[in-house]
Length: 173
Image (cartoon, rainbow, N blue to C red):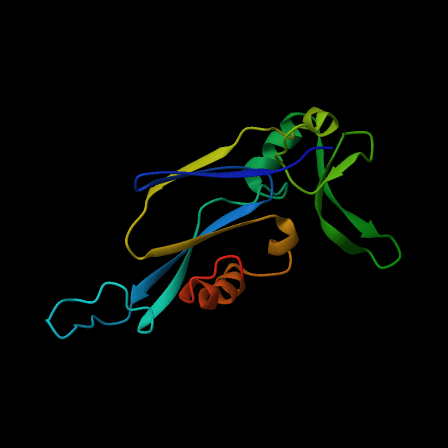
């Protein structure tokens, strides 16, 4: 079996995110609701009390049901199917990648590093790369595996981290 990778490189104000698999990276940024001026009539630059938090998704989860991922897997002769309960005809869990004539590997992501069996079914290790220029309103980055993202939304994660960011306690989050 293989693994995922989500790598961030920051050089100056340029952030580059490379992703393979179902780990995800998000950037929390703030947008002021209305401008606020200080005593010297200068615009306050970091007014987090009068702001709206926004999530910028820096990587996408490589799931086999995504159209371009599914098409590649099918072109390699793999299958994309979810498990089903035959008694209730209900889907059990996520879509998975399978070899054409075997119920292996059953991988729930469409890109992976080091999975030789999944490679035969069209799972690739090519990263998707996104580059952005960081701005003053960009405040923190969260990288996590599917163990977080399967159970929490991007907004939930940001809401948990905000108080720790405000108190300058990154390890507390």
